[in-house]
Image 1 (cartoon, rainbow, N blue to C red):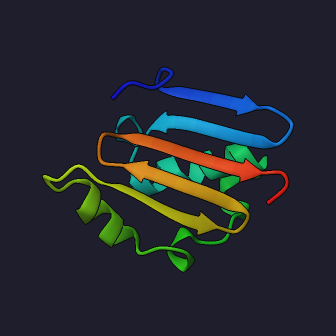
Image 2: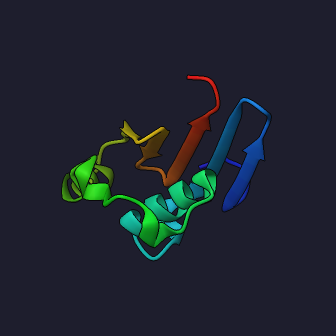
Image 3: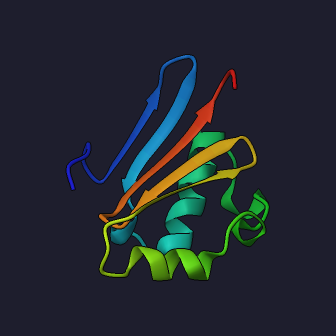
Length: 96
């Protein structure tokens, strides 16, 4: 995987983005929730449960299988893109 270090955060007026490697965290769910919290400037425990937006167990099975895969889903006003190579991108678009 080749992205900007284990964790990067970008704000450009239109888009806020967090890029990280979910394999270097305490788990897939934790990595996603922490990235969403960071990009939305929220506390992780204040966010709606991730399970209301995606099947986390299925995500884990797909992402840890043998195939290279990228999955996208929406969580509130956030776009989440996660790949089997570890790349996690969470974006909050200012004008969607």
